[in-house]
Amino acid sequence: MSDDRSLDRSHSDPMNGDRSNDDRDSDDRNNRVAVLGGGSFGTALASIAADNGFEVRQWLRDPALVEQINLEHRNGRYLPDYAINPAVRASTAFEEVLPGAGLVLVAIPSKAFRDVVRQARPWMDASQILVSTTKGIQEEGFKLMSQILEEETGFAHIGVLSGPNLATEVAERQLTATVIASHDALTRTRVQTALGCGYFRVYASNDRYGVELGGALKNLYAIAAGMAAALGMGENTRSMLMTRALAEMSRFAVSQGANPMTFLGLAGVGDLIVTCSSSRSRNYRVGFALGEGRTLDEAVEALGQVAEGVNTVRLVRDKAREEGVYMPIAEGLYQVLFEGVPAREMARLLMRGQQSSDVEFVLSREDVQQDHRDTGGGHD
Ligand SMILES: NC(=O)C1=CN([C@@H]2O[C@H](COP(=O)(O)OP(=O)(O)OC[C@H]3O[C@@H](n4cnc5c(N)ncnc54)[C@H](O)[C@@H]3O)[C@@H](O)[C@H]2O)C=CC1
Ligand SMILES: O=C(CO)COP(=O)(O)O
Image (cartoon, rainbow, N blue to C red; front, side):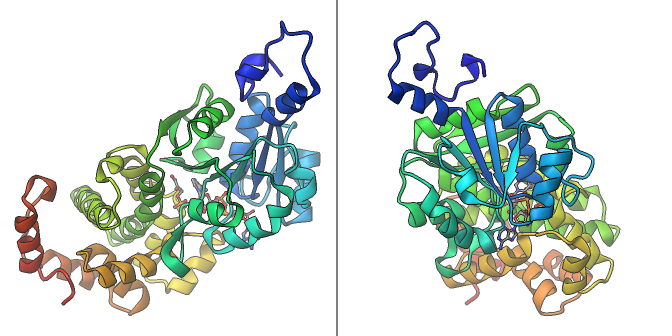
């Protein structure tokens, strides 16, 4: 591997012929990336890191898929047309994947995330950088995935990768940007070095919570956008939906103590645009199937992959009610998904709500509260 690809350039001076074993161990670690998860995003990221010259090992549950990745360099289940870099070595054994890796990317759906990290923990060590790529929320305690990484490991180098990153487009090498968010500068720079390349640009943020929350929240509105498209609603409608979604997301972020300005970036508005516009988004596809008249179970079954938004709708709607945050689209989506309200009827109800103000951040706090009282917000 060339030195300029090293995750830590300070340890990779080729002029230094007199290096200690410790330095060499450190070089080895910095040159190794582990990916947990064999879905489409985990697979695309593993291959990028290998293209960048890193030694990459990928952990998956399914032995048949492991064999296919190792022998055919293909992931027939999640990215059938994608040629994986042959340097990616897959395994079902954590002990073959984790020890010696400087960077660990965790691309496991939120429902299984804690379990998998817990199983993997004995093969991890505190010098490793752990990064979640998962855009979901854990029901107990309303925890985001990086908080789970922190709780399960106690490690210091924790980050989140999020942005408008449809895995199939990343696999096609479409020009794409993402965000690595961490309070830890080392985490930010090492992820930028491991994954940044000619078609994948990695921006940095120190607002880990805001970036992670943006990725989880936008999935709700992608479901709503898919539904609107299936019902034959137009571009004006989608634009209204996305813009009002951003208002709701920001309102929720503020209630959680997060900085809403982060939502103006790639992991907020950027991800909202792509998932509300693309039939490649799984959340959008679930919404589309619902708009065509399928039941939620049928829509999820037909997808055959995880659409994180289905679970997130319930969690966010409950949290918003609990904390008195006005989120009419999330509330309406919940009623369509779980209470049998027809989508068209819900759209009609939302349109007939009291007229309110556009950008509430330019209003005084009192005016915002009055606005939400006028529109029936607050659920009281
Ligand atoms: N696919 C995409 O376009 C993108 C996905 N993401 C996020 O990345 C996360 C991972 O997504 P994908 O790679 O698409 O995969 P996915 O969500 O389809 O599944 C991930 C992998 O986890 C495995 N898995 C599921 N349950 C498991 C369990 N109980 N134990 C062990 N492994 C289990 C699956 O077998 C699969 O290999 C998602 O939560 C998503 O929010 C982020 C950006 C883009
Ligand atoms: O988060 C994504 C793109 O940024 C992927 O969205 P879906 O999970 O809806 O496919």
